[in-house]
Amino acid sequence: MQSDLLTELGNSLLTGSLNDERLMTQTSGPAAVQILPEANVIKIGGQSIIDRGRVAVFPLIEELVENLGRHKMIIGTGAGTRARHAYSVGLDLGLPTGVLSVLGTFVSMQNARMLNYLLAKHGIPFIEPAQFAQLPHYLAERGAVIFFGMPPYIYWHGNPAVGRLPPNRTDTGSYLVSEVFGARSMIFVKDERGLYTADPKKDRAAKFIPKITVAELKELDLQDVVVERSVLDLMQNATHQRSLQVINGLERGNLTKALNGEHVGTIISAD
Amino acid sequence: MNDGRHHVQSMLMRESLLDRNVEKSTETPVFKMLPEAHVIKIGGRSVMDAGRAVVYPVVEALTSCLKTKKLIIGTGGGVRSRHVLSIGIDLGLPTGVLAQLALADSLGNAHILGALLSPYGVVAIPPEMFGHLLPLFITSVPGVIFNGDPPYSLWEHPPHMGRIPPHRSDAGSFLLAECFGCKSLTLVKDVDGLFDRDPRIAPDANLIREIDTDELKRRNLESLPFERVLLDLLENARQLKSFQIVNGRHPDRIVAALEGEHVGTIVHSNPRHPG
Image (cartoon, rainbow over the protein chains, first blue to last red):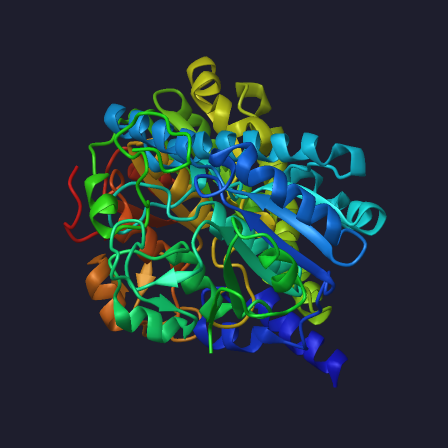
């Protein structure tokens, strides 16, 4: 039956149009494999964590080290204030969204390199997209790898519907790594407890939302959200990573709990 | 105010880039990087796989255009791409992996075309450097060839249905033309343009000479001669307002299209964004 499917689907794909909706519905195929089912993808916020310097970064580094050997970790980095500066300069000069995305990539790469050096004595590498084929080896040998969160779209980064900021930034890039590898979890380490009804830094009356689905979240039509909207859209189409957790990385112990599968922040799920 | 984060002074500092007002405030005019260059995508299955009798005349049409125009030539993946996708799906590999695998096939076709255009100095540029060096190359030679697929690779978006990567060589060519503010985008296929049904299945299908994205989305045609994601990309484009699909089996139409003539189907966006 499986080989029949390959022949039939293969035939259809070879002769048909990949833009034919009827054909596309057939392409879910046999069950998807989880490439790295034991891995946890952890995204360390740029503006929320790394831009705070030592006071926020060192305790997190310690906590990451504590979890080595217990949890496999693929650690992505956000960009932060330097990216905001680069985007501001770029927008003022009229640079296209794709070029802005190149600028954002460099900043998240700087952050990845800094974490790399702080974790170097544990033999944890920083890898660029071109080196992702080696990721399984490093993860098996060292228990963790670091990557920059920006997806490698560069000049091919699509425009958003509103404004001109690249819509698929470091949350999205990190999330897609968790999806493609079928990772065990996707944890966003930020500087707030999780999702609120408004930005808690601006609105004291903002209410904490411990758990919500993407559909419910879209219904709320919030002015601001804690994770890139692109992640929410992608999660609805995801095969593997259909939920994520946002946690407060400024509180020692939250990361460990999240890695252990505990609910300490906001869980957003596709269903 | 010291919020514990070390900031760099900028318009966007401290902001949540996800705040709707902040997003709106970033709508600034766009600079055109390569406004005189034309992006033209040569179909994989529809041209490159079709044999010498189809490919050679297309190459001839391109070389005649290269005398007066700057061409940025993308290539599709064709039948090899489809084959690797079908094997990949059967193995249960996810969309991002399929996208990564398919890159090799459109790159192969780029090299095939590059070999045939070598006498003109027009070759396939390695993807790692292509985006960054494109303006340099296109200044030095009249044309460059690139892998039509965008570098999304493992970071390709899971599609709404099935597992086929949604951003393939049409999308890659579109996104490049859009980012660089190019003069036009032409998709060279093996059909006269967009039809209301697949003309290879329904011989009485009607050619649609011109249509906008709103109308096309409304009609929700089952089969399109280009990647469906192009409708979204075109809607959100700030620089590229339309693209044309022409039949490469009539290579004179390639020359005509690059002259700005309407010889196939033109799909254009509805006015939504400035520029």
